[in-house]
Length: 235
Image 1 (cartoon, rainbow, N blue to C red):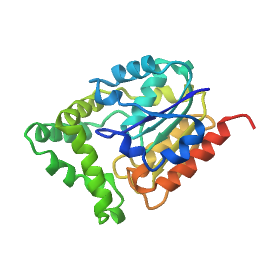
Image 2 (tube, rainbow, N blue to C red):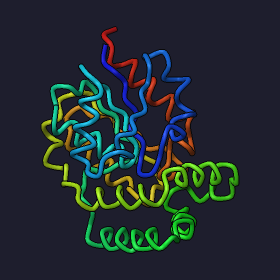
Image 3 (cartoon, helix red, strand yellow):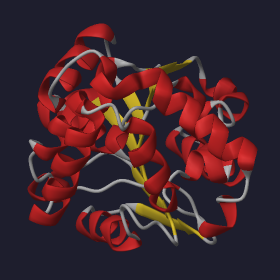
Image 4 (cartoon, rainbow, N blue to C red):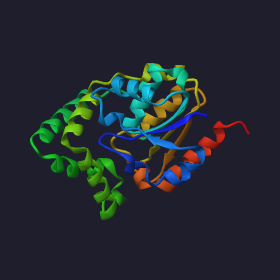
């Protein structure tokens, strides 16, 4: 049986998946990888994930976790039996995004992490969720657990990443692509681009949803993933 691996986004941890774990339980133990917190580059993260989990894999990655899942696929396509990319992209950073990340890194290193996090909340959540104090507090607590050092290292890894779009047409495993309709960080066009390039891919766009879809709409994402996982098994 394939091992189900959940790949969190940048400066994220198990909390990103808490609302989905009960629905995923029938599909075997879901392992939340933390390789992104332990290695400085995406290729190193992917190599560690492959070393730590033997055999066939089902990868579900959100945001940076989806980008890492594509790197795992690049290194060992024969190991990946199915792939789900949530609020992610196959593109490399644009020069504008590189500049924004570089500015953010300087602020993180200057001890101004919370200032950056609060300024970027509109890029993390749908506008309707910004008034949800508990949701915002949980998110900020999660990123604070990661800390400035991880934020710096992971943003540098994102800046250095390869463009994965040339990889897409060769993907032969089942692929689910999902995003929030109002995602401002990885706009829906990024998900449409992936789905259009991969034969047989499934695309889902969640209405009234921003970037962090597993936190904003865990029930909807759970239903989407369980339908997809059910379809992977014969019968």
